Amino acid sequence: MFSAKVKSFAKINLSLNISGVRDGYHLIDSVVAGIDVYDTVCAKPRRDSLVNVYMHGLGSEEIPPERNNAVRAGEAFVSAFGTRGADIEIYKDIPMGAGLGGSSADAAGVLNALAKLYKIKDSAALGALAASLGSDTAYMLGGGYARLTGRGEKVETLSSPRPYCFLLFLPKTPVSTAECYREYDRMPDPLRADSAALSAALARGDFAGVAANVYNALQRPACALNPEVCEALEAARSFSPSACAVTGSGSAVFALFESVELCRWAKSRYRGKMKTRVAVAAPTKTFLLRNPFVLSEEEKEL
Image (tube, rainbow, N blue to C red; front, side, top):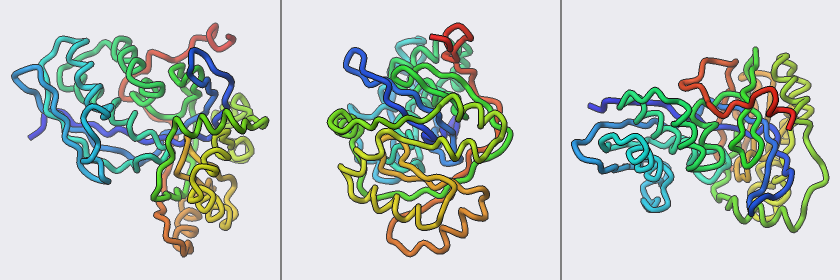
């Protein structure tokens, strides 16, 4: 029996702008929503300081330990907080290489599970550790609705009084995030989403305002790198959703509908070979851990 168990949720990028480059990293301005697709992380204490991570499902067993962010997160946690190690099992349900944040979700899930296991209450230190592991890992600690800026490490939490419903189209072939950003540099998109308007629309529960501001600057590069992304977008548009776009750097595409019933209707009539999945971003709920990277009013003006 494991001593700690947590769910770590996927995210969708409702908007994603590229605002520049600093120190070799692309700067973004993105509004994200946590969805009800999650990996399950279970942790059991060890007597020594070793961290063992066992992956299950979706081909995750093939991830080399040296490239697994969950392993890095576990080892970093033990080093930072001086705890014993853990045996960790991760049961994957977030598709990999899809732009849904699965790798960061696993790293954040490990941090949350170990914090629960060893009763670590210092959320600021945990957030700083998460930020050192990946640009959006600090956001993934709490999930929900947020506006991410900088490299993704600056998090302004948002609220929504209503749910948002999506049909996900999941190509088999992933898109490399690094290659997608390089392709963007070769073919930048002059269009931009109005993230402030999108954030305000979420707060009002203004469905039309949210749909009007869905946009991803990485969509064209993702399509150029992977024809399956174009196929997914074409399939999504065929059902006349309120909006559709690539999430992250792809390869997943989401179609936004006004209800779960409409999502299920579109799913039932899709005749392609691509996997599809209904997902919901719920009304705002209490985060597992308060994210210490929430921007102050002064920081929002910068």
